[in-house]
Image (cartoon, rainbow, N blue to C red):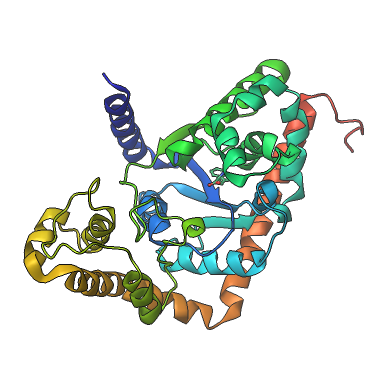
Length: 350
Ligand code: TRP
């Protein structure tokens, strides 16, 4: 079996196990709050999280705010970004009662796990991580100590709550692999405390931005979930298409045109070739009009809910307050178990 087929088979098996016993799984996943969430997040991960939750799996979402400064100097707008992301989570259907949403900076015990974890990995292992290498190169900066140890920090994000299922994009697989190594070595050295979490690789297709490259805020090609209809229209209007009147789906040769077809396809669940045939000779202007209408229609309800929830600042506050409280309780308990396993309980129990 090639690796793609093997991954597909493993995912199908995992899916069966989740359906059979959802309560055996605890999902932990999240993101760095570097900006607003966009269509790439929605089709890539948000909808998947909502599905897992609807199957009865407990979901934890970490906003990895300390990790914002792995590849930049400042945390600019981090508080706004956190609030904005929470609104998108809620509008996408994540149930705040069943989901623990928290910025990890607010959970001190989680970070203390980093100390024993760091003792379990070598410098050479940290330097070999391909994603850390790629992200450092992309940042154009020297490798900071925080960037180098980022995957171990992510292990703390996952293991503090004994998360055993971690939905991630494939770029993030080396980090989940390292989390498994850390859990295994901890258990071998100090006694059984942690599960070895399984990655759940997102199977949805990569969402292209309006220029055909992967959708990313840093490329300036993203449609944010929270944009207005007019902002959406403006981004799509600026998309680089080409002068051929006849619209065809041909990603390698016509990246801009094909990206808009893919966007319409995702929003309307229609194959991109069929949309291209419908537009026929009516050219880019018609393609852009349809793309704008498709995005605005698909997200009208999401945006309406998001605006309604955002109108009362207490909504986000209370979601974060209860998320932080629950995450702290769990992190304190896990840290206690860790210190106990390590023989670091010095005071006699009353
Ligand atoms: N590293 C992830 C990203 O950049 C974000 C993240 C932090 C994460 N901690 C995590 C993802 C724990 C999954 C599990 O997208």
